[in-house]
Image 1 (spheres, helix red, strand yellow):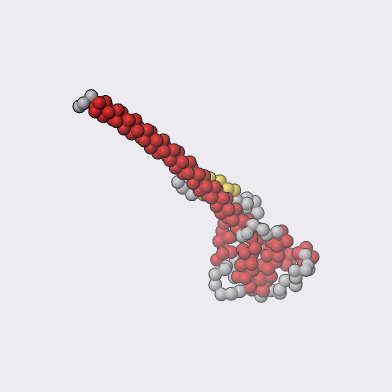
Image 2 (cartoon, one colour; image 1 turned 120 degrees about the vertical axis):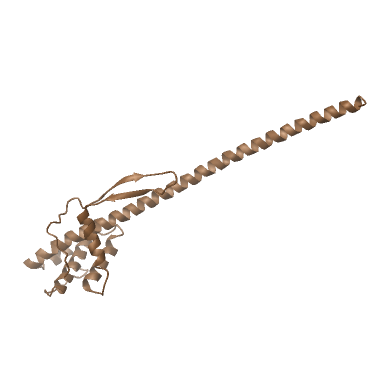
Length: 202
């Protein structure tokens, strides 16, 4: 019913790289994320499980995604997310629940309570949890980098516009000053000609 396991999925190259960066004068800066397609599909499948009637699995995936998307999930937290997923899988497939594991216990101490079958289940969900966290965190990092670069870019563009405005203002002031000076000289010259003409009796 859950369809979570994938024997062909491996942990390598699940940490996506950030590349294909481009900055254009009037365009928003963006980063294209190149990811392992199997890792991307794991995240897509997990998001699909958030849709539908409320269930143990839906709550576990919601807990996982909210905990990982902020780039702060610790190893202990990821182990706990995987524990919840494993426990829900057991419940919804008609198997016994996982042993009780509360917040006061370390995950390593909880894992010691698992039997052989449960020890085979848990690593699959630990792998899936790490993959989902890596995908969510890479997107969070992408968004943060884009925001910072675009904020900086807008600030730089505003400063450039201000510099241009100040330069134009200086040109206008200089042009106005030159015009006033020229007008003043013309008036003086006109007055001199008028005075000379008057004295000569024209």
